[in-house]
Amino acid sequence: MACKVAVIGAGPGGYTAAIRAAQLGAEVTVIEGDTIGGTCLNWGCIPSKVMKTTAELLDKLQRSQEFGIRVNGSIAPDMEGLMARKQTVVQHQIKGLLNLFEQHKIQYIRGFGTIRAMNLCTVRLADGNTMEVPWDRLILAPGSAYAEIPSLPFDGARILSSNDVLGLRDIPRSLLIVGGGVIGCEFAFIFACLGSKVTVVEAMPRVLPLPSVDEDCSKVIQREMKKRKIELLVNRTVDSVEESEGRCLVTLGPSPFTKDPQEFDKKPMVIVADKILVSIGRKPNTSGTGIETVGVKTDEEGWMTVDREMRTNVPQIYAIGDALGPSRPMLAYVASAEGLVAAENAVGGEHEITYDAIPGVVFTIPEVANVGLTEAQARNQGYNERSATVLFRSLGKPHVIGEIAGEAKVVFDAGSGRILGIHLVGPHASDLIAEGTLA
Image (cartoon, rainbow, N blue to C red; front, side, top):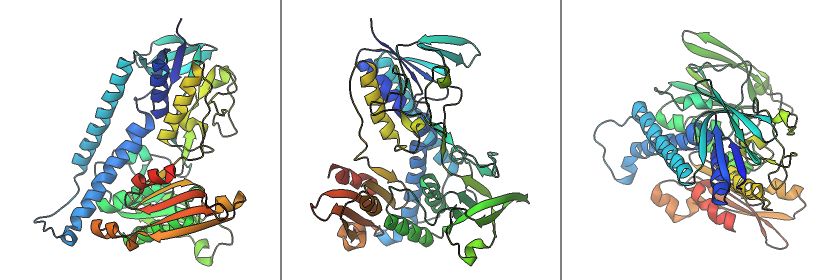
């Protein structure tokens, strides 16, 4: 009899795991409470990159004279057209995934899945009915959701989540972005290109304050923000928000993370904005899944814990993707890789995952990409690290395509010459980092 594998969550991790388990002969059921494709397809990677593509094209058209092209008439973004194109792209991908499920004879159930007992899930369907799904192995891929700030409650009109901003029908005259991480920086460049006056507030002393992002890359992005008139306020947090004549009056105070703040940083500031985008991180989507029923362990913040085989502390249950938290890369393609490992092991394999050479990309303008260790990480791990940097402006192609901002840095061990990390900021960094990953 075929092994029954149930998957809760149909994002990149869940659908990849389901397809692989089906290819290996399992009888697979996928349970998804929302829409197939998860955050990546519906509210993240894909729709935001559709918007970025339009923003970059608009930017190029506005610079057309530099390339020897005369444009007669005005050039302006069309948000209705942009949103329609975004939806077309998303729906095309959804249709493709459903076709793959059908081809692999995967049962797809749209409803909210809960672990009722060992080897049994209950699914609450949209019509209010319930159904039971028995399983021999369970793969949990519930993903994550945007985090909230009590002082900035989302209302979908003026205070927006990253989901809300992907459905805007009008370009805000002014946009305040709370959080200078990946999502905040990507939307800062997108909306600046589309015509918004953008301000970014970040509690840390630099944008993209991720351990994996080289500080020099952050410096380049901060310079490019300044060129595009994106106002950046670091070492700041939001103290309060008031509404006045249909706009938001935002009071900023010093960040609790700032060591030895300057006098300027200590003084409160008031920013006026039409809309506020809050992008301060993610939280696990494990509430209501019933993991406590069978004793699946989580850390203090609710993120599930697994071994290198993607197995939880309950031997028949695996977990993958964003719900594992920031201790692992929260990336769609990492979730897919974890899904492959979980599927293989669920049907009797003995595979382990390694995170040593996973590229990361931030789709700002220009893009940021990295793989391996930063100089600081290499130093902390005991390497006698050195680095070599080349500016994009010293190469011919950046001048040809009119995008000269950026640099490439290679971090290596001085003794052996071994490459430890590669850090890019510049045009097509998301494509070029594949070579760095191979190296």
